[in-house]
Length: 82
Image (cartoon, rainbow, N blue to C red):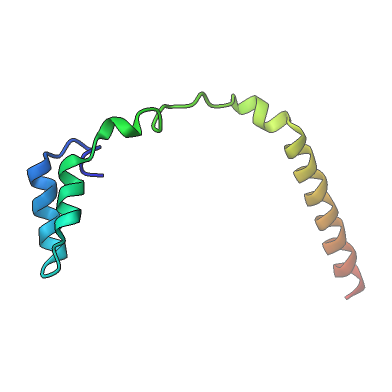
């Protein structure tokens, strides 16, 4: 994560050593030194979002409205009998 946010390798290793003491592992230090941020290319691309109107008019919204109406009718019916 530190590589992605622009930290230097030395700063990332210093933080690692601060948290990993007394069990600093050479394999972890080597991994941090050799890690290539370019291997994450394409993971953080902003995907286009759906327009707000499309969300409110889709079939999922219709099912949610129908379900909510049914639950409200059941609640009202049980309230009248109690």
